[in-house]
Length: 512
Image 1 (tube, one colour):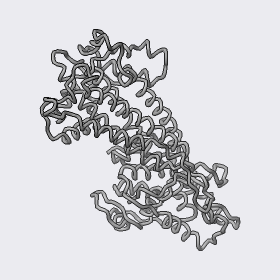
Image 2: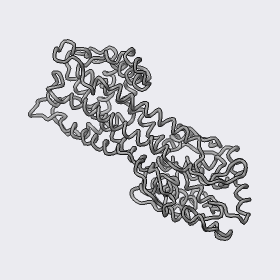
Image 3: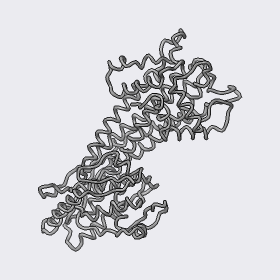
Image 4: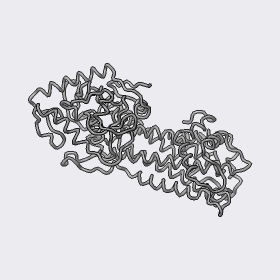
């Protein structure tokens, strides 16, 4: 099994995906253990002094003014975990929780948190055992970190609360730890706070969304090319020299992808003989501009994620010179903004795909295709209601594009009076990614059927490869009306698994 070694300088997005989705094992480097030990010595020295130090010998948040006596400090750390594990609502996905735990371990291993090496090792042991704490949908405001979600994870380390075992059964966390030979931790000064105070949940969801969107943007280039062919559009607008004079990198990449898919098509360009149609509609002609802008948004989001992966997010932090200082690095604004940006881009990509689908189904705009791509229009409804479903998904995506990060709400007796709502931005982005997948699946379904209805004109070899692969995967072609939901589900699975891109790349080579 693949192993990810966690050091002091952060981790990569590939590491996060390997642990969250691939079940990779986690090990602590010798460098990390040394840094953990050194930082803990600083915390222990401060704890022995009479002067109050936030997070070490004081309360938290609005209660930070109380100095906590030594005999109550272990109780203080237990209490912050128990009281902050206050999430409600449905459970979040296993991959999100694993990303959350792994990224918190990454910060702990930086040597800036003051957590003991044995606590960090227990975090790794829980991940390696396949134990997943029960974390709920609601409870994070994205400032002071993802407090409630991280608290539910810390509760499992203490042997309290509920967790899911590797068999998928939810049991008391203490039982699961014992079954895997893992001792519950007894938290000491600062450790409870250090386990809770990070942007790890929103960052983990950002990294996974970027991985999914990377495939979906390539998928959108392929479905746009298929729709262009089915509508007998021109590929001249994809010429590299046109995109070079507006040099947005994402736009150029999308145009190049579409051109690669369309190479060798006998379907493109026929509208030149159609006098009323001088040029293609925006949804076809401007596909690279819209998808390209989304790609450039992803590039910015990836830069933010890389910076965050190299960060140590905690409050207070242990500095190399021995100081333990309060800070505001737990504020999730940098991550929250790009999560919202990505949801906006996803909504627009879905919107333009739906417009192309609608054009394929409208006999007045499809240039010779049957109404709704029906076998016997009037007797058959064809893909009429498939487009309804697509429109409903797009409408939902537009609602999900409303930014969460603009909606701060005060908490903790006005001590925490401006929050990022980054966790909420991440949760809605996950839904947006799911819905975008479905929207592109419906465009794929409509475009492949439309191409097959263009008898006597051969599609591009890459397009034919996509059609063949889709049919082999259960995405059925033209014919009389039938129960449509299974066909759409097959198309969704085809896009979701990346098979749409893979099938095209067998002809085009790697898409950008």
